[in-house]
Length: 218
Ligand code: DC
Image (tube, rainbow, N blue to C red; front, side, top):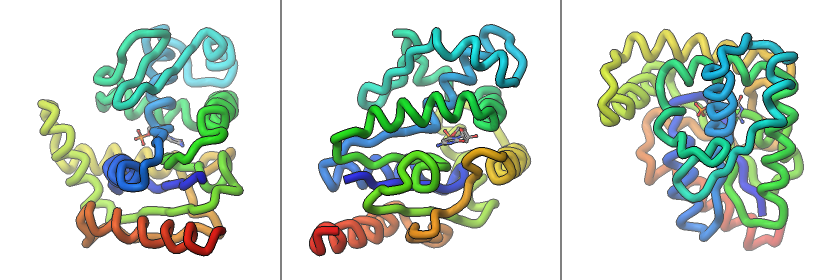
């Protein structure tokens, strides 16, 4: 069974995905980490953000996601991909069709034959249009920015909510406006607003929907 969780940044996808996967005994896939790894590789090579440059570098990249870690050509980049600089860069590489096709293919290969929760922006619309269970999380932009700022501060990065919000607005716009696989709920996705919900409440809501569908054998 494939469960997809899409939505904008700071909406709580990662936390919810991990908790939900643990409750269901499913694997999980953080597709944002894959875009971040490609962005880091292009930043390090000082490449321009265009399809030509991306297409040249992609065949040389191996991205592996052992539980809780991200490896880029064997190097542990789990921390290096979580900086504001890489966040902005990831949002720029995510616009490039060559990168999206390359990563979508890898995501389908990773998920094949598994029970898995896949989180991202296009999992229910583009990568897994036939997923058994699709969710789209949304929340007030300021609440999302405050969550993200707290997360970054906990990691020792000094950021303000205002800066995170401005950054987030820019990335949201890019995500929603890109031509290939823009951020939007799939027609058959269950939309959940997490603004006033705890992580626990969101996970319970999603688990209920999934168990009901499993029970009906859908
Ligand atoms: O979820 P995140 O912040 O780690 O994602 C990093 C960037 O990658 C973000 O700007 C959106 C993009 N992304 C995407 O376009 N499609 C996905 N399936 C996952 C992430």
